[in-house]
Length: 89
Image (cartoon, one colour):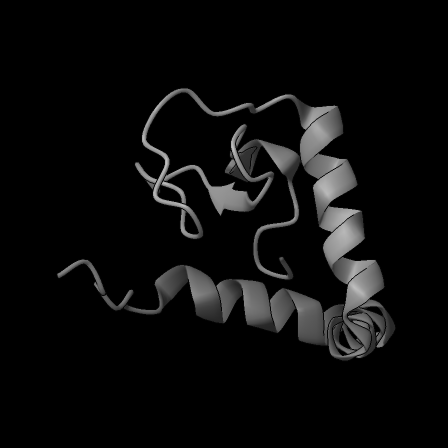
């Protein structure tokens, strides 16, 4: 959630209501493989529900908000040129 802040990077399973990334073809919880709901409002509601239920995630998000601007910029540049690990197997 920290790296993918925008709602258009997620979709919601209509069967179980789980938040999934757009790249997933099946639901990570119930293995649904049909049509997903990708309305921005519903995705944001699910994101906030996850944050409300997880104190650890709340702490991470607060730390992210408190980072100085130069660290945010450096992290963005570093992530842009970092090699991605392919975990599709």
